[in-house]
Length: 210
Ligand code: ATP
Image 1 (cartoon, protein in one colour):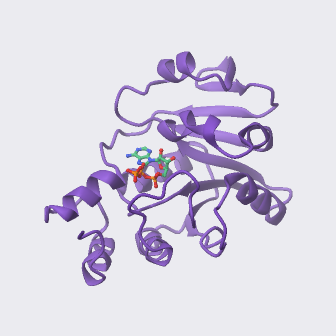
Image 2 (cartoon, protein in one colour; image 1 turned 90 degrees about the vertical axis):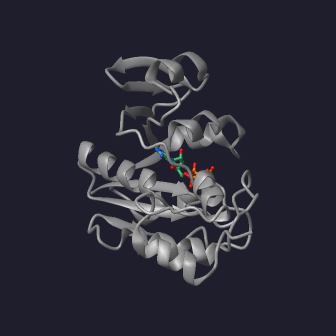
Image 3 (cartoon, rainbow, N blue to C red; image 1 turned 180 degrees about the vertical axis):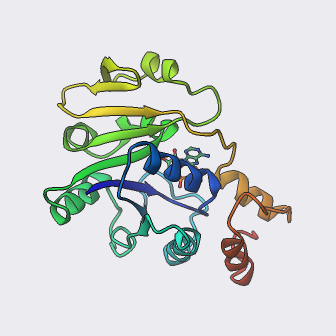
Protein backbone atom coordinates (compact mmCIF):
# COMPACT_ATOMS: atom_id res chain seq x y z
CA UNK A 1 0.00 0.00 0.00
CA UNK A 2 1.02 3.59 -0.60
CA UNK A 3 0.12 5.65 2.46
CA UNK A 4 0.27 9.38 3.12
CA UNK A 5 0.75 10.63 6.67
CA UNK A 6 -0.75 14.09 7.08
CA UNK A 7 0.08 15.78 10.37
CA UNK A 8 -1.37 19.09 11.51
CA UNK A 9 -2.95 20.92 14.38
CA UNK A 10 -6.28 21.01 12.49
CA UNK A 11 -7.46 23.80 14.77
CA UNK A 12 -9.97 23.62 13.12
CA UNK A 13 -9.68 21.43 10.01
CA UNK A 14 -10.79 23.20 6.79
CA UNK A 15 -11.24 22.65 3.04
CA UNK A 16 -7.62 23.69 2.37
CA UNK A 17 -6.49 20.59 4.28
CA UNK A 18 -9.17 18.34 2.81
CA UNK A 19 -8.89 19.32 -0.83
CA UNK A 20 -5.08 19.28 -0.60
CA UNK A 21 -5.09 15.76 0.80
CA UNK A 22 -7.54 14.61 -1.87
CA UNK A 23 -5.45 16.04 -4.71
CA UNK A 24 -2.33 14.43 -3.24
CA UNK A 25 -4.10 11.09 -2.91
CA UNK A 26 -5.25 11.16 -6.48
CA UNK A 27 -2.01 12.42 -8.00
CA UNK A 28 0.22 9.93 -6.17
CA UNK A 29 -2.34 7.09 -6.32
CA UNK A 30 -2.23 6.67 -2.53
CA UNK A 31 -4.32 3.92 -1.00
CA UNK A 32 -5.00 6.04 2.02
CA UNK A 33 -4.23 9.30 3.75
CA UNK A 34 -3.99 9.22 7.52
CA UNK A 35 -4.76 12.53 9.22
CA UNK A 36 -2.79 12.82 12.45
CA UNK A 37 -3.93 15.71 14.65
CA UNK A 38 -1.09 16.79 16.91
CA UNK A 39 -1.45 16.45 20.67
CA UNK A 40 0.75 19.12 22.15
CA UNK A 41 2.63 20.59 19.17
CA UNK A 42 6.00 21.86 20.37
CA UNK A 43 5.92 24.96 18.14
CA UNK A 44 2.24 25.99 18.14
CA UNK A 45 0.55 26.46 21.46
CA UNK A 46 -1.32 29.73 20.94
CA UNK A 47 -5.11 29.39 20.88
CA UNK A 48 -4.87 25.65 20.74
CA UNK A 49 -8.24 24.08 21.31
CA UNK A 50 -8.67 20.98 23.39
CA UNK A 51 -7.04 18.11 21.55
CA UNK A 52 -10.14 15.91 21.75
CA UNK A 53 -12.21 18.62 20.05
CA UNK A 54 -9.64 18.78 17.23
CA UNK A 55 -9.66 15.00 16.91
CA UNK A 56 -13.47 14.93 16.79
CA UNK A 57 -13.66 17.71 14.18
CA UNK A 58 -11.11 15.87 12.03
CA UNK A 59 -13.15 12.67 12.26
CA UNK A 60 -16.32 14.50 11.20
CA UNK A 61 -14.53 16.21 8.31
CA UNK A 62 -13.14 13.07 6.72
CA UNK A 63 -15.97 10.61 7.30
CA UNK A 64 -17.38 10.84 3.76
CA UNK A 65 -14.05 9.96 2.11
CA UNK A 66 -13.26 6.21 2.06
CA UNK A 67 -9.57 6.92 1.43
CA UNK A 68 -9.17 9.09 4.52
CA UNK A 69 -8.48 7.93 8.07
CA UNK A 70 -7.75 9.67 11.36
CA UNK A 71 -5.19 8.52 13.88
CA UNK A 72 -5.29 9.46 17.56
CA UNK A 73 -1.64 8.42 18.00
CA UNK A 74 -0.36 11.93 18.81
CA UNK A 75 -3.52 12.99 20.66
CA UNK A 76 -3.07 10.14 23.13
CA UNK A 77 0.48 11.19 24.04
CA UNK A 78 0.89 13.20 27.22
CA UNK A 79 4.18 14.75 26.15
CA UNK A 80 4.76 17.08 23.15
CA UNK A 81 4.30 15.19 19.90
CA UNK A 82 7.39 15.09 17.72
CA UNK A 83 6.92 14.11 14.08
CA UNK A 84 10.01 11.94 14.11
CA UNK A 85 8.43 9.66 16.71
CA UNK A 86 5.16 9.58 14.81
CA UNK A 87 6.91 8.57 11.60
CA UNK A 88 8.83 5.84 13.48
CA UNK A 89 5.55 4.54 14.87
CA UNK A 90 3.83 4.37 11.48
CA UNK A 91 6.88 2.89 9.72
CA UNK A 92 6.84 0.14 12.28
CA UNK A 93 3.08 -0.34 11.95
CA UNK A 94 3.19 -0.44 8.15
CA UNK A 95 6.37 -2.40 7.50
CA UNK A 96 6.72 -3.31 3.84
CA UNK A 97 4.43 -0.46 2.75
CA UNK A 98 5.46 2.84 1.19
CA UNK A 99 4.94 5.89 3.36
CA UNK A 100 5.04 9.59 2.53
CA UNK A 101 4.78 12.59 4.82
CA UNK A 102 2.37 15.20 3.46
CA UNK A 103 3.04 18.80 4.39
CA UNK A 104 2.28 22.32 3.17
CA UNK A 105 5.18 24.32 1.79
CA UNK A 106 4.96 26.88 4.63
CA UNK A 107 5.39 24.14 7.22
CA UNK A 108 8.16 22.45 5.24
CA UNK A 109 10.13 25.69 5.32
CA UNK A 110 9.84 25.64 9.13
CA UNK A 111 11.34 22.17 9.28
CA UNK A 112 14.81 23.30 10.42
CA UNK A 113 13.12 24.23 13.74
CA UNK A 114 11.72 20.72 14.20
CA UNK A 115 13.15 18.23 16.68
CA UNK A 116 15.76 15.99 15.02
CA UNK A 117 14.74 17.22 11.57
CA UNK A 118 17.95 15.90 9.99
CA UNK A 119 17.05 12.40 11.10
CA UNK A 120 13.45 12.88 9.99
CA UNK A 121 14.56 13.84 6.48
CA UNK A 122 16.48 10.58 6.27
CA UNK A 123 13.43 8.54 7.24
CA UNK A 124 10.64 9.35 4.83
CA UNK A 125 9.86 10.91 1.45
CA UNK A 126 7.97 14.21 1.59
CA UNK A 127 5.05 15.39 -0.50
CA UNK A 128 5.03 19.18 -0.31
CA UNK A 129 1.80 20.96 -1.26
CA UNK A 130 1.79 24.46 -2.66
CA UNK A 131 0.05 27.11 -0.64
CA UNK A 132 -1.09 30.55 -1.78
CA UNK A 133 1.19 33.56 -1.07
CA UNK A 134 3.65 33.02 -3.90
CA UNK A 135 5.29 30.04 -2.31
CA UNK A 136 6.03 28.46 -5.65
CA UNK A 137 8.45 25.73 -6.55
CA UNK A 138 11.13 28.32 -7.37
CA UNK A 139 10.65 30.02 -4.05
CA UNK A 140 11.22 26.76 -2.20
CA UNK A 141 14.24 25.94 -4.25
CA UNK A 142 15.84 29.29 -3.68
CA UNK A 143 15.12 29.57 0.01
CA UNK A 144 15.39 26.08 1.40
CA UNK A 145 18.68 24.70 2.58
CA UNK A 146 17.24 21.22 3.00
CA UNK A 147 16.72 20.61 -0.70
CA UNK A 148 19.40 19.26 -3.01
CA UNK A 149 19.45 18.70 -6.72
CA UNK A 150 16.42 18.50 -8.98
CA UNK A 151 15.88 14.94 -10.21
CA UNK A 152 12.96 15.57 -12.52
CA UNK A 153 10.06 17.98 -12.79
CA UNK A 154 8.79 18.62 -9.24
CA UNK A 155 11.06 15.97 -7.67
CA UNK A 156 14.11 16.91 -5.61
CA UNK A 157 16.73 15.05 -3.64
CA UNK A 158 16.73 15.91 0.07
CA UNK A 159 20.17 16.95 1.28
CA UNK A 160 22.20 14.40 3.27
CA UNK A 161 19.48 11.82 2.65
CA UNK A 162 18.46 9.25 0.09
CA UNK A 163 14.86 10.44 0.47
CA UNK A 164 13.10 12.76 -1.94
CA UNK A 165 10.75 15.70 -1.97
CA UNK A 166 7.80 15.57 -4.35
CA UNK A 167 6.28 18.97 -4.96
CA UNK A 168 2.63 19.26 -6.00
CA UNK A 169 0.77 22.34 -7.12
CA UNK A 170 -2.67 22.00 -5.60
CA UNK A 171 -5.73 24.16 -6.20
CA UNK A 172 -4.98 27.27 -4.17
CA UNK A 173 -7.22 27.72 -1.16
CA UNK A 174 -6.52 30.92 0.70
CA UNK A 175 -7.76 29.46 3.98
CA UNK A 176 -5.97 28.94 7.25
CA UNK A 177 -7.17 27.86 10.66
CA UNK A 178 -6.01 31.25 11.95
CA UNK A 179 -8.37 33.01 9.53
CA UNK A 180 -11.24 30.75 10.60
CA UNK A 181 -10.64 31.35 14.29
CA UNK A 182 -10.68 35.10 13.63
CA UNK A 183 -13.92 34.87 11.68
CA UNK A 184 -15.63 32.88 14.43
CA UNK A 185 -14.43 35.35 17.03
CA UNK A 186 -15.91 38.18 14.97
CA UNK A 187 -19.12 36.21 14.53
CA UNK A 188 -18.62 35.94 10.75
CA UNK A 189 -19.75 33.01 8.65
CA UNK A 190 -17.33 30.16 7.92
CA UNK A 191 -19.77 28.32 5.66
CA UNK A 192 -18.12 26.78 2.54
CA UNK A 193 -14.70 27.07 4.18
CA UNK A 194 -15.27 24.20 6.59
CA UNK A 195 -17.55 21.13 6.30
CA UNK A 196 -21.05 21.73 7.69
CA UNK A 197 -20.67 18.99 10.29
CA UNK A 198 -17.57 20.69 11.66
CA UNK A 199 -19.41 24.02 11.80
CA UNK A 200 -22.22 22.38 13.79
CA UNK A 201 -19.64 20.86 16.15
CA UNK A 202 -17.94 24.23 16.66
CA UNK A 203 -21.30 25.87 17.38
CA UNK A 204 -22.52 23.12 19.71
CA UNK A 205 -19.31 23.27 21.73
CA UNK A 206 -18.97 27.07 21.53
CA UNK A 207 -15.39 26.81 20.26
CA UNK A 208 -13.16 29.76 19.28
CA UNK A 209 -15.59 32.37 20.58
CA UNK A 210 -13.09 34.17 22.78
P1 ATP B 1 -2.83 27.88 11.52
O1 ATP B 1 -3.46 28.98 10.72
O2 ATP B 1 -3.43 27.69 12.88
O3 ATP B 1 -1.32 28.01 11.56
P2 ATP B 1 -3.10 25.98 9.29
O4 ATP B 1 -4.32 26.42 8.56
O5 ATP B 1 -1.77 26.28 8.69
O6 ATP B 1 -3.16 26.49 10.81
P3 ATP B 1 -2.30 23.32 10.16
O7 ATP B 1 -3.18 22.38 10.91
O8 ATP B 1 -1.17 23.92 10.86
O9 ATP B 1 -3.28 24.43 9.52
O10 ATP B 1 -1.82 22.65 8.80
C1 ATP B 1 -1.51 21.29 8.67
C2 ATP B 1 -0.78 21.14 7.35
O11 ATP B 1 -1.63 21.54 6.26
C3 ATP B 1 0.46 22.03 7.26
O12 ATP B 1 1.49 21.28 6.64
C4 ATP B 1 0.01 23.20 6.38
O13 ATP B 1 1.07 23.74 5.65
C5 ATP B 1 -1.01 22.53 5.48
N1 ATP B 1 -2.07 23.47 5.05
C6 ATP B 1 -2.91 24.15 5.85
N2 ATP B 1 -3.75 24.92 5.14
C7 ATP B 1 -3.44 24.72 3.84
C8 ATP B 1 -3.94 25.25 2.59
N3 ATP B 1 -4.93 26.16 2.57
N4 ATP B 1 -3.36 24.83 1.44
C9 ATP B 1 -2.35 23.93 1.48
N5 ATP B 1 -1.82 23.40 2.61
C10 ATP B 1 -2.35 23.78 3.78
